[in-house]
Length: 227
Image 1 (cartoon, rainbow, N blue to C red):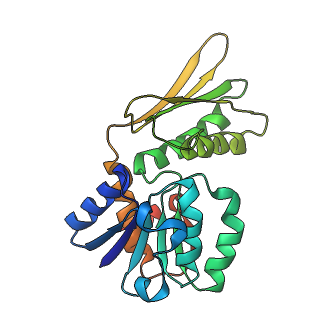
Image 2: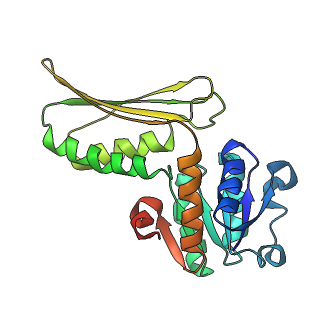
């Protein structure tokens, strides 16, 4: 397959590397060459099996509009844009495009979502909080993963109002800790990424999957279908 990767940052560069390791051809375009999605035209996109976006919250929306309007197949790992999901979903459906999006493409994080949901149901009377730590260059705060964890907890127990503490330190790929506590005991769930490779592998596998499909899918709902 031939993939277009939008974004030359650390994760986007690793996505390109992983895609090549899996036998695909890749073209990478940085934001400086694609201001407001200007490089994304229908004739240009026609050559690619899928587009993978790891840019910024500011760049991803024009990128998505340009790609989905052509009926392209797209994977979006960029966060900070979900308030526009309704409009972008409608665009994708009108144009028969394919889209997989998610706040995190790590299989381990998605296992954490499930465990968090179960813990919130199994620990009535506990107070919950989330602490997330990422590298200093991360644009959005709280992280999309932390917000999804909050949703997982609060949907399991509507009495919860889970605060999030965000830290930005060094080059940390991502640490998420769920703490549930009473006056007499504490339970902690922790996920730590040692590198961005898990995110990149998930994104490439998502691109392989969406390349032959139409519709809008959240990564957590489809990752178990990947080969």
